[in-house]
Length: 451
Image (cartoon, rainbow, N blue to C red; front, top):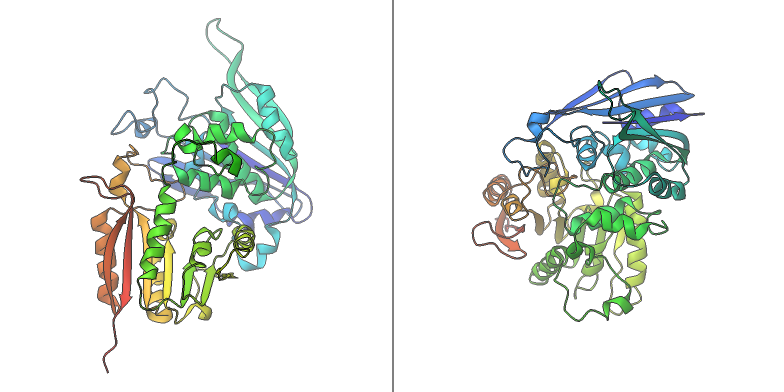
């Protein structure tokens, strides 16, 4: 299974910086027994061609549990077809391009369209060629679908059922990758990981600027979310909501925000708040309605998320008693003096998206230099993944790690030992008798310094 991106024209070499991959080196990483490799077959100012492919280990796919990927052992195409598994394997390698966060001097190229030819396959799909055309042509691509050659030793068929897709069109690197990360699992009609409301958030993020206007939007959403219970969680027009006779089960995301708000309301100092990694501003909007708050800094490095957040803030500004959050470009990896000395800092579902070995430096900056009066951290409880029947998979493909309750508490205790902060824990969401709650929260409180 592989994906090839070719671009021609002036400044084609910029692709290497947007991908954050050196054309002189072959990128190779191991993901759960499978090798992910990326290399440049062409590289010049006028043309760049890069291929990323996965060499799977079929035995690794079936280890521990036959239900890990919900496939039939050996007699299947899952380890060879471009699918959600493929997307999860290459997500880390393409993370810089997907997030639009290259080195500062190349950020101006994130929104620059290039002439692309995109080849990927093989695909194993029940969708017709006509449907595949309808998925990609509204996005501005010319589509070519080819079938693989079959060379059986006996008379069976002359053409393979596997297909290869070629897209040509002018677009940005980030945009085409995000479209592929949404549409490849739709084509494959299969997902190997647990689907919950976070999948909706991914669709909103990756579908920004194109999914709402797609003529097959409903089909894409249903294929992506799979389960009626999850599909119902998508925001529907008000008139549709009124038709519901039964109350909709509260989303974990909403419960998480409510617990954070409740925690802040009970703090003695809460006039100034920093929402670190605020994304599209969903939590920041709610912070704007807390009585007594005088400043909210919504800190986020993504420009696309910033645009979405600003729209959300403008809508909320029409309501009474709303304090408009101040949207600032800021990264956890660099010191920002604007964030120092605030009453409350929040890391809501952020730390699990950061490489674990990079966290100590970030926490040192927060505790030693920003010195908030209170710090709130929420993160998934890895034990609860058993309820979701995830096996060894993380709750979301963007996660770099997930901690169980003991690991998280030990991690927090280490922070408290190194810095002048006490801490308390709470669970968020429906609690399991032995596995705890799906989300865990730690509140760090700064100790009074002795004279």
